[in-house]
Image (cartoon, rainbow, N blue to C red; front, side, top):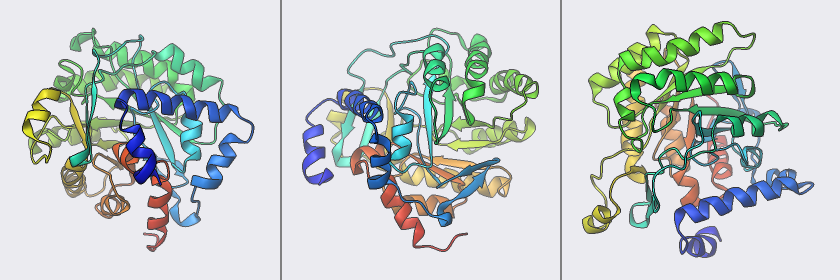
Length: 346
């Protein structure tokens, strides 16, 4: 029903408008007594076979929702009730920021893809902290952290540390986002010097806390093998807890959408089916180079249950979806989990 009736209606509206309406609707469902249990009844698929422990956290299933959907921690409990084993909120920056000018989100239906140049629009760390601290929850929440767009790269470590400290007590894990292509010069942070400067402050703060929060690094699919090796070295040298692979891509290779339409859209990060092969290749390379030394959260191009199985078989510990849910509907996580249940537990 979603693909035949609901999706065609939603796709008549702009992607950003649909996104905002969906977040509001989910939030409203959570305000209705029994709303979240009803979502769980229809959309969850629970089984001990799906459970796994990764960086010290027990996940009910390995399928999560990637950062970018619930930017401000407004509907993460409702998203969890849709069958996801974890939800990553953000990207969160110290100060609120509106992001890039609209329009900034575009569908490529012929490619089952999206292009976005949102620019890390969010309400800032104080608003997100307030949303998390007042919420009782039974879903694992990761926080994707970044710098404000106007913060120069040399001052970026202070921004990351501010968000990390503000949200430390309310997150289950953190992801350092240095790979968003929609913030000017942000991807230039993907080198050992900048990342070392960023994570040093985070690690120093964590050592003084009673609770341990895993820290992961999110990398771009556009890195060369040599650059990926540098990221691996940073993770190992600083004993970070894992890598999220990957972010969106600036590549436009192999698209079915006419080049004139793509050119008209302009800049932005591409997600969806065109990224499937690259994400799988990156996960395999990371596992091969590290021999499974640290966990990998696979993200990017996850459009079918088979994609999830392939990524897990390649060595990913967990998998995140985003564009796949937009094209497949709210029951996507349930479909994936049912598919995974048909295979023996590794």
